[in-house]
Image (cartoon, rainbow, N blue to C red; front, side):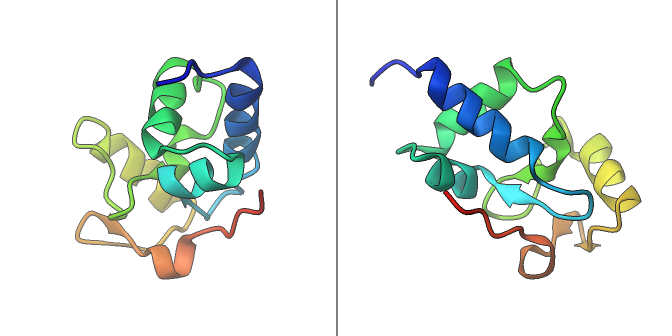
Length: 100
């Protein structure tokens, strides 16, 4: 696997920063928009370089947050008015269309 470049990291950060309150994107959405081949790369970037970003607006393709983040992430999203049912974000309603 090729090393992730600083330019790729900055593209991911820019897409995450652009997600407005009340909207979400998936790791795959961001990977596609940023020209990355894997949503896992976005996950890695988010784990290592997202403290100053609205990280809670990024979810897996199922609309469910990771178990270790679920309580906090769902609370933050609910505060923004994101529709949540049974611990899952309604992606049809809340998903932001990202343009790469």
